[in-house]
Every structure is written in structure tokens, then in C-alpha cells.
Amino acid sequence: MRETEETEYDRSRLAGLSRRTALRLAGVVGAAVSAGPLWTGRASAASPIVKPLPADKFVVYGSNAEMRWESMSGQGELVPVDRFFVRDHTETPRIDAAGWRLKLWGSGLRGAPPEDRPVEFGYDDLRRLPSRTVTARIECAGNGRSFFTSQQGQRVEGTAWGLGAVGVARWRGVPLGTVLRRAGLTTSAVDILPKGLDREYVTGGVNLGRVRRPLPVRKALRDVLLAYEMNGEPLPPDHGFPVRLVVPDWIGISSIKWLGRIEVADRPLYSPWNTQYYRLVGPGYPAGGELVTRQNTKSAFELPWAATLGGGREHVLRGRSWSGTGRVRRVEVSTDGGRTWRHTTPMGAGHGWQRWAIPWRPPGPGSYTVRARATDSSGVTQPDVAPYNTQGYLFGAVVAHPVTVT
Ligand SMILES: Nc1nc2c(c(=O)[nH]1)N[C@H]1C(S)=C(S)[C@@H](COP(=O)(O)O)O[C@H]1N2
Ligand SMILES: [Mo]
Image (tube, rainbow, N blue to C red):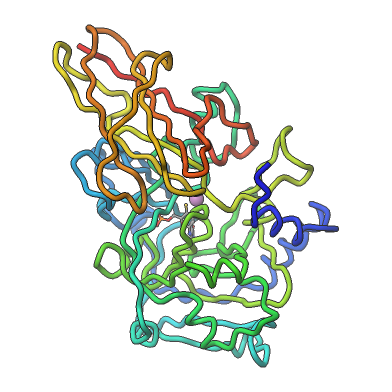
């Protein structure tokens, strides 16, 4: 029903293009356009992620680490870097800002600079341009994926995230539009293809090339940031130092880290990250699947998984709800298995997400599940069941959070 700008975007790009063709195209691009490594080293052999991942703040899955939600208890709106989730396709590269260049090229720029003679910006060039600071959320499209299996009994591919592959930070940088215009953006440009400087991604014996995902120029000009600061500090290595994209409300893969190149084209662009991954594929979707762009609506309690609460007294259940489709209008909580729902009290202004709280006096010792469900500004409420897709993206159903009362 939601005929969004993104649906139209996908249709116009994939019209007449079979899935096979799209995949082949992606393969060709992946093989042909891979420049030599510009990074100066890599994370220690021990961990693909540079920052410490203490067990009270993170659950680690190889090169990915999710935030433990109880570590947000007592925090303000922002997620401190020491607990912000990390999602690396390979590993965090160590890049020297002094030698770093952002290179823009392609048919959508004046004079159509070729890839080997791009328009370049250094780190200091970007820092000298007028900056903007925004509070924005980054969330992996697969956040909540494990609940397809644990709540719905469905098999899905990918990292079995709980609800912690999401974070809100204050980002400072240059609007991407500023840099695109300075590079000579023309009115016929339609897509850009930002590419990371991390190692090429090899999966199932196939080299898909560097991590890169097309973004429509329309979105690029609206609210996308070339960020060089996170929560008031230079970007940490794991979050994209020296410069990453921040693409508000769109799935995490859009926010390319360790940005090195941007192709700007007067025609639609493809990569495995919009033809093979980040498409909703399954019985409920058209052949070839549906492109995922925007995030959906979710809610989480700031409680351990599973939680233990002392009986015989009142507790305050706190949590956060967020949406890629608009502001959160209302959040309700059920402590009786979803039979009755009570309205929560919203806390703070909530740019990245809405914080809320509700008192609860457990009726007695035993096993409970607590549930939170949010309604976005367009009136859509989190459903009881998330529509299945093979790669487990966009789990937006109400999550039953187990609590033991002693
Ligand atoms: N270059 C590059 N950019 C990337 C990725 C990556 O592996 N390489 N992972 C993407 C994915 S899937 C997500 S969810 C976000 C995660 O951002 P974070 O690690 O800062 O939380 O970065 C995106 N940008
Ligand atoms: Mo992601």
C-alpha cells in the first residue's frame, strides 16, 4: 500500500532488468572496479574490531558486535562510542588522514571525470567547508533478525542480531550535497555509488569487491552527511575514520564507512549490495525481491536478555522506540503476555529515538514476558508478526522480552 518514493526508485531502476542480469552486472562491476589498497594497516589479529568489546556492553559475532541494551540504562539520548554497535564486512582498516583523499568521478559530474582522474578532496579540505551537526540513528537492516527464528520459527540467513544493532550519535561533517556541487554535479546525475576503503568482501568463494551501495542523488542532496566527528570526537576507526556517510532513516549499509570514492552517474548504478543483498525476498514479495531503503519501527527495553527483577516492589521499566518512517507517536507496554497494554510516559525530546518509562509491580515471583509496541506518526503500529524474508531484514514485530521475578 505504501507507494513510497523508494518503491518507485527501485522499480525505475530494475525495470526490464532480470535478477540474473542484475547479478551479472553487479559481478562485473565488482571485478572491474577495484583499486589498490589505500589503508595503512589493519586491526590486530585477535579482533577485526579495534575498540574494546567488554562483555557487559557487547555481544560479539566475529567482525560484528551488538550493544547490550541494559548498558543504555541511565544514558541520555546518545549511545557512547564505548557501546555503539559495529558491523564490519571484513575488518576495521587503519587509515592515515594525512594521505587520505575522497575521489569523485563519473558521468554525473561536469566534464565526466574518469575514475583515474577524479576530483579530489583531502581531510583538511573537508574540515574547512561549512559543517553541520545532526543527531541521527544508524541501524543495521538485519537488527532483530534472531527473532524471525526464536519467535516465528523461521530460518533466515545472516548475523543473528538481537535488538542491539542500532545506535544514535551526534554526527558532525559536511553535507554531501556541498561536496557533490563543488565536484561539479550536473542536473542529469541520478545515482551515486559511495565505496569503502576496507578490504574486498569475499563470500562463498566470490569476490564482491569493496563494500559499496548505490544511493539516489535525490536522497544524497536531502540530508546525507559526510561525517568526520561522532559524539564530539574524531570518528573512531571502527565507525569509519576518517570520513563516513551518515544516511538518516535508511538502512545501515547506506552509511558507507572509510569512504574513499564516490561515482556519480547519469544512469542507475548497481552493486551486490542493492541487487543481491538488502532486498526482501520471499513468498510475499515480487520475483527478484524488493529493495530495502528505509528502516522500520522497533522498540527495546533497557534490560538484560533475559532480565531478573526482585519481587515484592515496584520497578520502572525503561526503553526506547524508533522509526525510519517518521516520529514515534505512542508507545504501549504489556506485562501480561500481550493481553492488556498501558501507555508509557515519553521522556525527553527524542530526535534519534523516543525514550519512555512505565512503572511495574510484578504480581508475584515467576516467569513473565514484557512487550513494548510503538506507533509511528503515520499511525502504523508494530505488528505481532513480521513478514518473512529469506535474509531476515526489517524485523519490526513486537518482541517478547523474558523476565524472571524472584
Ligand atoms: N565500508 C564499509 N561501510 C559499511 C560497512 C562495511 O562493512 N564497510 N558496513 C555497513 C553496515 S551493514 C552497517 S549496519 C553500518 C554499521 O555502522 P557502524 O559499524 O558504525 O555501527 O555500516 C555500514 N557501512
Ligand atoms: Mo548492516
